[in-house]
Length: 349
Image (cartoon, rainbow, N blue to C red; front, side, top):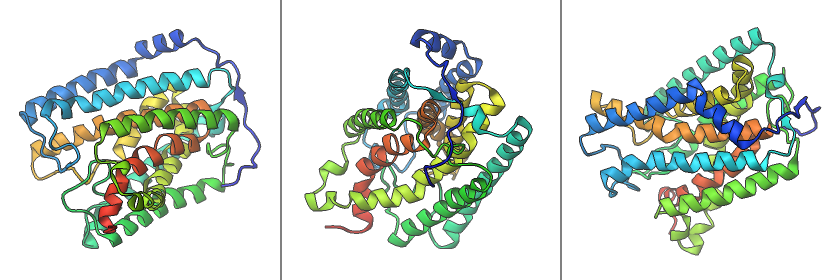
């Protein structure tokens, strides 16, 4: 993924006031619909769960039901703070013209449909390949990611999961689209390295502090020797989930969402929805009964819709998908929260 492509046109009229942006967000029908669905989801969970969540999530299982219910909304509030901060930190830079990075509308629509269909087949393939090899279904996260799990994955399971996701969701789509588009058009080249670096540092610092406060079982609870294996965590999750997420959603789909909707707000919402959809079957999900299925699907949306939107905002404001990868994905949460899981999987004393 070289960095020598020609720059695309920039939107230099992006110096909007924060208040005008917030008003536009609040009045957007998609946002209002999302808020209504968010509240509806909570009502359904309260009705179906009846005071207890059935998920295999040891990291939060001991927390009161009310705290587990509140957690997605608390996280969403922190995400909104990060979005505002992102806007303020990028207000003086030239904002890349995301629509110019996509083909004309008819082609963009066709490519979007084909990529979404391909992503669906890739997910279904993971649900088949994993069990066929004697493991759990493969998703965008390995079982136990973020929330731990009762039975840790096997070493071979981790590497096969990472390899499957890397080849299916990163390598194949990138090679196909790179023949037709430059790395700049795929949001893989920085247009302002200094501002990108500042954004990465600030967002990473805040998100890391949030993750450390939220999860008692984190990398700093390990021995100095075990902490060194954070590097292994970095490699596993960078290959298995960060690059697939970055290429499939934020390099390929995001410019096309913007081209089709003509709205940054709609693009952010679609980015969040797509990110959640790619985590449809998590290691903690249960599909043994209708109530468990309903709870699992709703909690996937509650858990991943916000982070997916944050990744969209970072990419739209910078035109550089690497920014979200390093500031809001690989280190926080994965290296910080998932290194204890890696230590357990590889039996590192």
